Image 1 (spheres, one colour):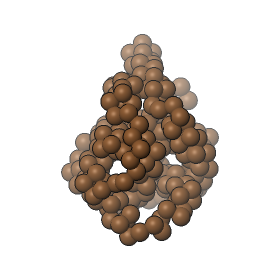
Image 2 (spheres, one colour):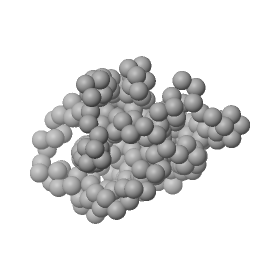
Image 3 (cartoon, helix red, strand yellow):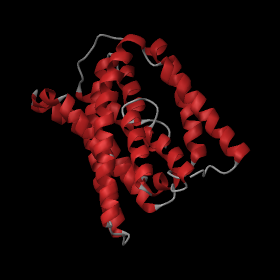
Length: 261
């Protein structure tokens, strides 16, 4: 991985992490184009730079983190399913992280769901999240272990299925990203070192660049997304996912080789 590739991947992460379009799926496709998808450092990079994006949530919603202790309890409850399934399915998840076809199919299926989610659940005014609701959202989030599903999309749809407003569901999804991504980063770093790899100075610099770029881009993306979502709903993201998924399938089966750089 070179610096330009790292910056591009970080921009993709910053834009897509909090949109219901799958940041992991987009980075798998981008890294496949670059010819680095199966590299161990690339897999580490795509996880670790999420630290920059979650820092943007802390900055934007700083005051919300001092509401009450119950806020943290609910986040913990919602986080539990990801811990359990993440540990149980770690090897399977890693095997899927190089597969553009899985990403494409997930994008298309998720796209059709987003086209209908507003019709299914409407736009409730409810903003209260119970512990049961938090746990159910946590189970929905686990669907994002399939590349292309979208962590934010799954957890937002999960929140709306529990009669939360679009905004409340989206914001809880942002908050839930913090322990989820932090846990994934720690686990990935542990696995990386356990496998006998060590970060070089150049790789450390790439991780630093990726986190800084991801942080800046995510700040803009979150503010833009909340405003758009409140007014317009999910349909545009549904259409985008379907088009992106179909494009990936066409490229894969007709061009055969995704590597261009």
